[in-house]
Image 1 (cartoon, rainbow, N blue to C red):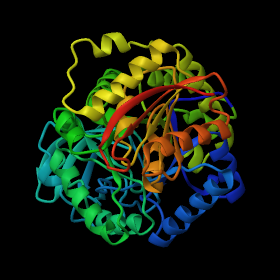
Image 2: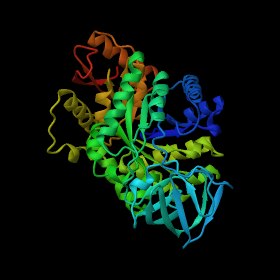
Image 3: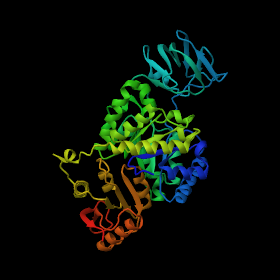
Image 4: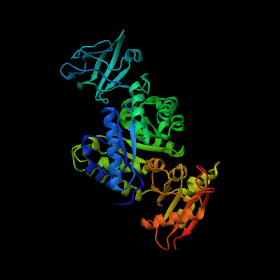
Length: 477
């Protein structure tokens, strides 16, 4: 398997829940497994998390588990016949007070606040924008609309408002319960759906920390950028999170398809600048749900995300319900590895005019610069918290970064960091012993051999989080 810096997030579902297949997928390149809390009961997720941990153990590599919260259900209700065919020019009523099943004239709402959130002239996009309604007027609990773009509307399809502006909170009562479930199996990351502000992420972090306290665990928080309102607040959301997901589906419906590629590039740049991780998601290999090979457009899409500098590319239905989950992972891993070979290294430009306020950060940057210009075989970071490898991973470099940590939770969290290969290793409190142990660990795994030069960072005294203060260049005897 080609060496690959970009990580792969795969969604677990009926198509990938066979233990043997899941193990094969992890061996083929899955770094993070996403559990979609929009489907299934609490026990289902607990069982699936156990399945992932066992498969990873058999495959001999750790993967991170990401619990993806459902967020608010901004959806229409159900239809008497399961669906209705809407023709352009028809009148159609979205009725928050309606309890009986819908029909050709209108339907109820799961999202009861819609009449308060819209006004005449607004555009509503249903079913990922495939159906477009123009709001004529609001009467009490009823939103009267005219069908602008018709089609088949079936049960519980999503509603977006063009330009954003729906008031639903990012965290629902169900999400709060799901956070407790995710913390019971120590999910490494929690993805928050539809945050609009940094406050949404701060509230999610409080809830996670309280739920995880008894397990002495702290998950990483990923903000899914899928609302128009989140874009102006991007930097403050990034500061309140550990990373973001470029959730291109809902975002495209709110801001328009044409705006998304430039936003994707902007978000990836912003995340890397803020030392946060970033996942690019939605329809990356969509055709492989039913076909054994991707389209050329999908290959370009994945490659462009890699060249933009994304930490990870994500698969949803492709691995959850698709016919070719393993083949999809193999194809994606190959595309990532090929794209990375064309990546520019711009360390000199990246560092010119840059000032570092922290010793550990300057050591991390010094390691990158030295390893690149000296042609080191590897960069090695002895780390407790994972901060030093994270900083290193923000800059493209064709030298692999090996992060050696005594903490399993840190190893799993680093599974999402671009170009970082996390390894578990007990660390001696004595510096020279720790350095010798690290080299022995790397030699045993075939990462370095006699004559190779590598850069290694650590902190003195050993084991103090955030204490990286030493860079050493060594040649393997």
